[in-house]
Image 1: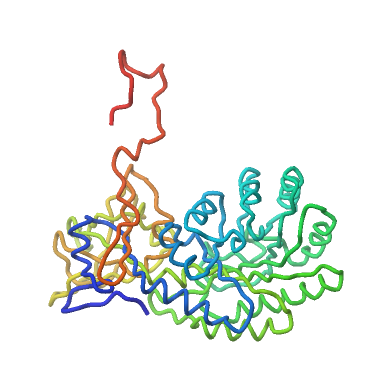
Image 2: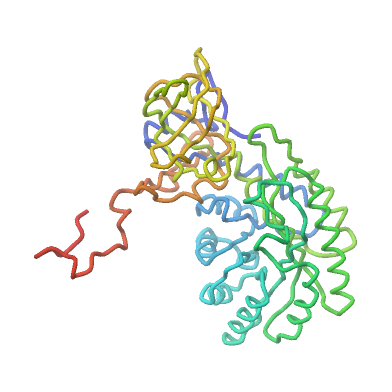
Length: 427
């Protein structure tokens, strides 16, 4: 459920017409509903109210500090995978004791930053990373909270690019070897073993892979406790999917019921890292039609948003529903919706039956709140687009549109390349 709806054939976000925002802000832009974000977080959090838990929103899915603030104000934590995401989370007001640090490639400076800020724990992905965390903690004279991220070799039945729980994936430590790594961690004086962590993938639309994972983790937790290693936290990651097209993912309450039942005898605080399920359907991409054209039997709608703004269709062949901002009686044709980037993979939809759009019409690309702006780039030297948040009957620009000057900020022409009497880079 989301708060994008048609009123008299015109798309609104909460109590604001989308076309009005486009007129004021320009296109393209990302648009989020505060009401939807808040409700989705509350529903997920409430589903686990019967057990001790922390909801650590996955910053990689949408890292705008205003979006993060929506969740930290509701008592949420943040799951991070970089020092930059930690910086964002802190700016958004997160309690550091509700921050978990995942990711396979943590640098020492990032580890030290997280230790200084006092995060809850690192989800450790390799034996060498464990050594580095211990070394950093020893040099700083403090203990580092850790959980080992184990790879359970469970098929999440999702797209190969977002599957993370198989042996062939780069993530985590083989669950068969993890007990040895825990024994090693238990000998390190500047490491505090706090839990077990796991994440099997993204856009998972069935409960069964999560329960298969839980059953494997339970065996590990019991084995650790038999060796005197007291596990206090069980981080089950995120991955619960949403409806983009015809998917029928489980409701968070169904997911919670199954997980709580499976974890009943573990007596751990459960940590979850939802991202897409919270923000995916809470945001859209609004773009404008530039041109329409036909090449023999092939029809194209060229819009002003490109793969640098939303890469999911070109990268994953992902489906996003597309609809006009203003409805009307119109013919439907089979078209490719493409952007201005010089790549054949620059498209938002391929061979899709859509209403016939005219030039300058507005188009809404739905379910774009997750892995939209957070995966955007400046490819083709295109300034990053604006982000807008609607609350009730007002909209707020939470990221201004970049300018051409922003594109070269930080770049410098060295002296040997400068023209005579040239002092600065022209802007």
